[in-house]
Image 1 (cartoon, rainbow, N blue to C red):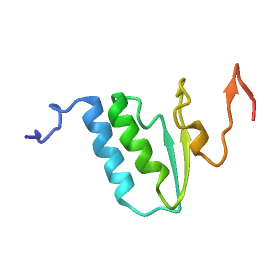
Image 2 (cartoon, rainbow, N blue to C red):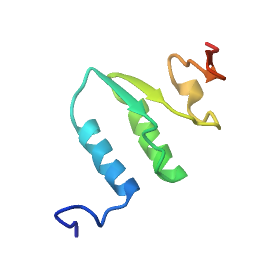
Image 3 (spheres, helix red, strand yellow):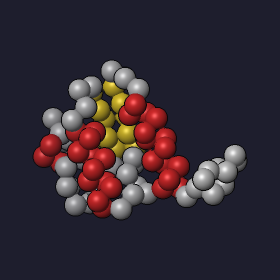
Image 4 (cartoon, rainbow, N blue to C red):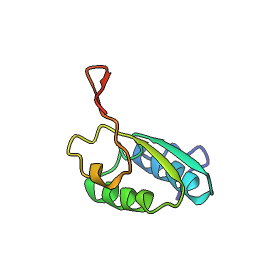
Length: 86
């Protein structure tokens, strides 16, 4: 049950609702900034698999230290110490 003022939802739950709203719509391009930061690894994997299958252009900004999905993107730009390494 969701309260009218949604105070009974966690940050992760609110982030899931916001993400679902964005992914439900059809956009030519999506920019997702730290889209999975509040999720556990299993949920992150499911979301990233879905995002990687989208037909539109997607820019993902992440601090994925494991590089789990790095090889699945068409282009990767890495920034370290304020400098682009791409």
